[in-house]
Length: 352
Image (tube, rainbow, N blue to C red; front, side, top):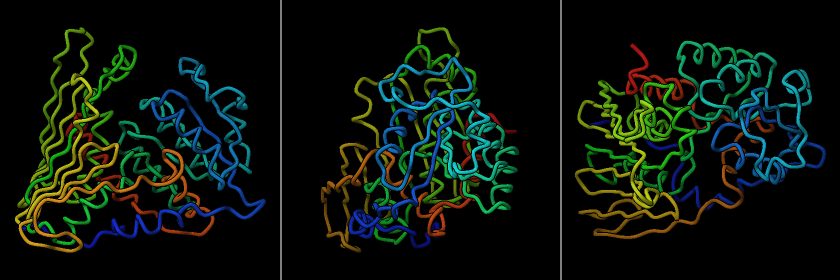
């Protein structure tokens, strides 16, 4: 049986404390934040979040690589800054790095060396040794690098993982996770530079969830296939199997399924039942138990937890504000992030 420790964040407390999490910063104590890069798919949404959250003062955007977009409506009326301006301004305490995956780690390194807190979007590059060195330097400087994995604060996933960790599902033996997402030609070309393809780009979110439940895998096997008629070499049909002493996690990512977002799933199966999150949005959790456990009755029950209040990615940035202003410990440690990155790179055939 896999030993499962108590979760740090419970589903019930996540719902009860959702409003309290959105604390208002004292007047004059806002965190000045800038962004480096606009090429990441999450960049526009994170600009929106940082411009409306009361904890932050959004200073501006640096676009050091001119092949990254600047046309989105959200980029209008922002201050465009040079890299030296962002790095050299000591009043900018935090930087969100939203460049392409092949560039984001080098910009995060510059920010850490300048003594800044960093929100680093996924995946954090492809150089595990460089990531390890950067996280060590951040720790020495008493700074936090927060990874931008999308579903760390998803109430349905939090509840499913809590049910597994607290033993309500019984002896857990399987976790199944999937993402299917259509990818435009320009993004396909960018991702084809990485052997792991869509598993590297999108599967990293799911690797993070598997590591959150089970920890470091004993064995990792990746399957990387190119199935599209587009001749770009992108690994666009992928599967990763993580093996543990008495459990497995299966992660599948592909770029074909029509309306794929409706069929994304996170499923955890144990000897007492199953917890299934499908779709990811709008939030839906199904729990089906042989015997009642925790807050759940025996049999099948459908739960639609409320989404966290505020903008997309608000919970990530609100936690970072508490880290900066109140000294709160991050929900995920640098060690967790390194285990996640190592597992991802191994599954993608990008680490020997």
